[in-house]
Length: 539
Image (tube, rainbow, N blue to C red; front, side, top):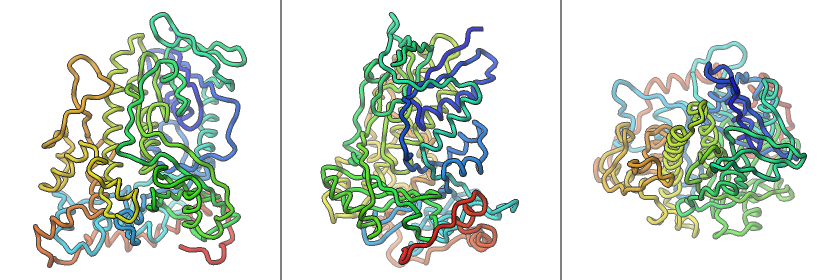
């Protein structure tokens, strides 16, 4: 049988994840052999970006067959158990966690209403999970050696994206994926409007049945060749630039490696801190309308400390939006070529991985791709707007009014209509799982999908909590003191102290006995170097 040919244009993290994952899933499909190739530029960057993943990365690794220890060693990886949000509410040192692990009482989950009826003297996240306190203690989510985990915890990873791409390339090519190091110079089109082949600088003509555009913001195939329009979403997410800086542990090491990502609000956005085994990467995600590039560098260096004053930085421009169709004709766009939201909550990284997994589920073994493209576009658009609502919520609930940026993001016109409908409804009824079943809420406007879809499908995007569910919404809503005023009206101002369930207290008693400090686990399990602690290092 003639193989189905897939060509991924562009390597990097997105391209090689697609190559390795599709190769693993489609290798023995029982229907038709699939040949996968990757063409990427011979030029490889020297230092990879630091990435913070979501727990879905463990599915990616498991399907490809990559061992966790091998992965962490190869990518300078560390554990991520949560995101800690600092100064997002009032800018006075306030913080809260969005943890990956949640423990809820059964058969009825009354965690939210009991917390709202209390004096809220303990953070909501600490009443539904031991993980915020475990993060504060700096503990790894796994014990050392062969010990069993007394407190099973959900987690993800921080990693060097370039090293991960290198690892995936090695795995994929060892299993038959063809690798072309060459420059794409031209695209040949078929008479029916499909892409027929790409031409390279070295004179190759690379044909395929299905092309995957992983060329980043250049969008060589989906935009420049097929002309699929870009849907701008920057009116709801204002940050359009990131200044990035690496702090090598050889130069400055605090003596610990945080087992979580930190997102600290600054004057015109927020800075993310991603700890690896050899360095910490900071990225000031900000809006260029409210701070220029030089002032952003200065603010980030001041945030990090005196040791950062001479460190080099580089700048990345961010474009918030998505393609009207991420699958057009015989081309699928993954990564930034298909869309970008905001670095917050690792949203765009998740979308890229989701695109790969969804493509594997909807792979077109036959010649008619239209039904698969329709479903793929519908699913990806639903997920994009689901994530957009969730990220938008982080900004719009702020009570900060100390800078122009924070005053702007809280304005009603900066809250998208679907999120408005959710927040308005939840002021009458606190969020519950049923709110995400075929979601249609009072005063929610119609918003047909930009992709158009099949005749008769004019439905708005549907939030089914497939990415961020009820527990995630509760973490952000109550971390940002949503319903605080309403609770005073409903329950009065004299309320009982907040109670932490006994099963969480028991978990916290057990955790220090089996879970070592994060940096101790990294040194013993995967050989992280023992760096000298810098004088005056801050926690």
